[in-house]
Length: 130
Image (cartoon, rainbow, N blue to C red):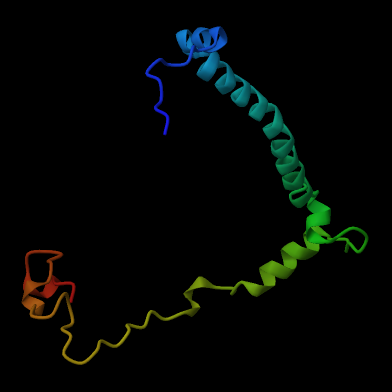
């Protein structure tokens, strides 16, 4: 069996120059990859925005409501009198009715309070709100 010689192989002069300048081995491929990928990504980005524009197009107000040809003429005076007839003639026709309280709920305030704790309008007991 033969033994290997201890003498290393002679490295090529190109490899020694590349190893001396790491920018050639790492920097240039990185820059080429970065710039090249930006040019490739422009096509994908443009496709994305084109697809977005086809999905979301701006509609006019009439197209949005679907009122292209079947509009009804509206008279403002007629609409005014129609709305006026729906309003009650007098605001004094209603009666203010108090809502019944649940069982156990005092007349004023939170549970546990009495009408003695109610706020005063005046100083006399008859002037209490409740």
